[in-house]
Length: 494
Ligand SMILES: C[S@@+](CC[C@H](N)C(=O)[O-])C[C@H]1O[C@@H](n2cnc3c(N)ncnc32)[C@H](O)[C@@H]1O
Image 1 (cartoon, rainbow, N blue to C red):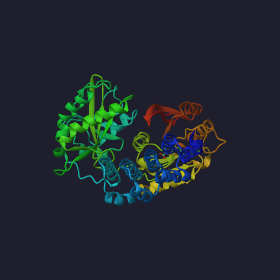
Image 2 (image 1 turned 90 degrees about the horizontal axis):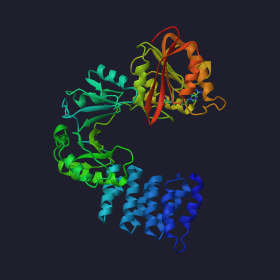
Image 3 (image 1 turned 180 degrees about the horizontal axis):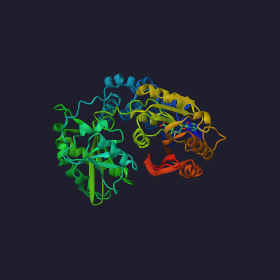
Image 4 (image 1 turned 120 degrees about the vertical axis):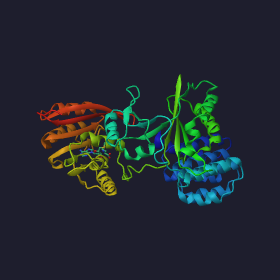
């Protein structure tokens, strides 16, 4: 019911007549799932302070953690709370909000129950800025295969980038899209930070036994498998990690339909297997992720190092709705590239990700426009952070004033049913855009257009005899299938 649910739930929460505690508990929990209007937060604070029922107080604390409340309020209520497990919920709520003011009071708090102590450890871990004490040992090669996760549908572009960076890499095969494999002698530390068309790097462990969620023996098999992984056993030596410092990991299970209970059992098995190796489960602050992909016949597992951070896209201070993932952006910039002196334009630039990624490859001049003032401001902030020279102005891509002659057009088009101008439907915008493109793209120029509204763009491009579609492909991004067109002027082949 969304916002309409506030009123009846608040009424339930405030009703303290006899026998209503179970309903207050549910109301306190559900209110945390709605948007946090101030009156809701106030009612939950009151419940946490005054409700005679401890479970209602616990649920109110959890909801406040989700909705957000000044940390001082929770710190005060923590001091007054008598029940250990309610205090644990307040502590977790403080950790969840991620506000550093909560750190000192939490460090000073003395836990009186094991549950509270555990909550305290988790909350502090979450709030403390994670300073990994781990670093790469230069030039060390990984004992197993090293894979690169790349956008599905753009593997060729990522492969080309890797090869230009002197990495020996190959595609993993049609049955495993979105993955490249590095050559045997590759040192992960030398490869990873340089490649922009790569999401993440996987350091593979030895394949394991088939694991079925329904098999009660599966956790024991996980313990046996993980405990014998030479990659994990030697991780301390393999990385540059100080003696005696536990390496922290976050565990993840890949695969559909695996129930929470199964995941929890496997996590417990992993904890048991890895504790003797000096590896510690720490889901909110970690040096690497450990991913398990169970299969009926064979299971896979890998680690994704994260201790070194990822500064590649640090220019992204601001976002707009439907921003493109910068890894996809980096690949699109390479696909449209016609030369280092090209004049490049993005008529629906959003937060300017595409232009910034294209600028990094070298261009004569770059410019962008967007109909939304918020997008214009976001792009200006990001461009300043990137240190690139790109001109941005506000403008409607349907209007000729938003266009100028150029060698490349690179655009992630709006794909909602209606565009920012209410009277212009998507079809009309695409038709006009196609017309302007036909007039403004230079004879040897190239445009890359990217949208989920595939039919509308096909129609618009098909109607324009000045343009020719050189290539059309489908890219997977954020769970969506997005169409990509490479377009040139008619009369010339790609
Ligand atoms: C899919 S987003 C582009 C996101 C961008 N590539 C990024 O990574 O931030 C589409 C953008 O088109 C803009 N837009 C919608 N209608 C427009 C129009 N008629 N003219 C120009 N821009 C428009 C929206 O404001 C939005 O920022």
